[in-house]
Length: 359
Image (cartoon, rainbow, N blue to C red; front, side, top):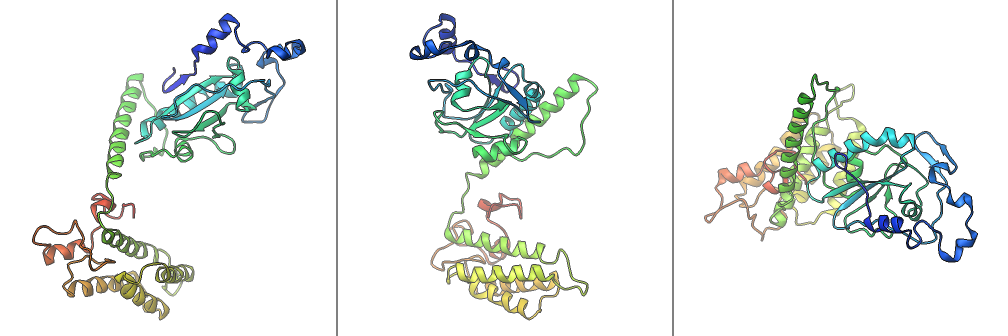
């Protein structure tokens, strides 16, 4: 293994090769008479050409299928390569860096990285129809190796986030360096990498803990949705203005379409639909909202109107018969606490980081 990449090794195959058993080095018995020198030539001597990013090859065809002998209880990324291939040689350290970062950032499903030499395991490469080097394939957790994996470097350069998307991995976010770091000594570089690994581990643990939360009630979900909608329109509608200081027509039209969609798609029992959404539709149509301050006034007015009704449900509730489980204690929440919670996402949405939740 080099770094976080393991060289694929199948002891059973090597035993066959050593003892010249089975058909691993020989063609199937019924085809032995048809063998010629062209079929016996090594992979390196076969016809190949360079397409700029891969060395394209015409693989020898195997008469029997041979599959990777790997466990499917984790995700796997496999590089099929040839030792003589210049692209593989150049890609080696990039692949190791991708493996290191991906394994560092993964928060739930484990992922393993491998390198398979098609000089040695040409039957496996033939089975998966590898036609160029390097070819990167991925298998999600639970996938069968009797089917070829998804090709990960066909149309775009492979990187950790692409690996995460294609294999359904959950990766923690990391800060992106805007300049190339230089280290005077190897000790400094190792210390920096250790620090980054520690930060990534902490981020992964934090993100994994977030997934343990779900909104506790139906009302919590709609309350979180109401706050997220209010936050989105406050921060997006007036980012750019027309020359006379009004909302841009494109943004206005998008808001009108979305409000109409909310009225059509959300339940009639949602108090936001029957109150705030209706008022917002009227205000937008009549150009009564001319600034972010005016928009915030409409939102705050609806929240205050809700609280003045002496409701013990948070703003944005959908079911008046269902109490918001996290808002109060045995005696119920105080008016002051309810007024604060009206404007706060629940822990299940933002995990104490306002406006950075999952609603």
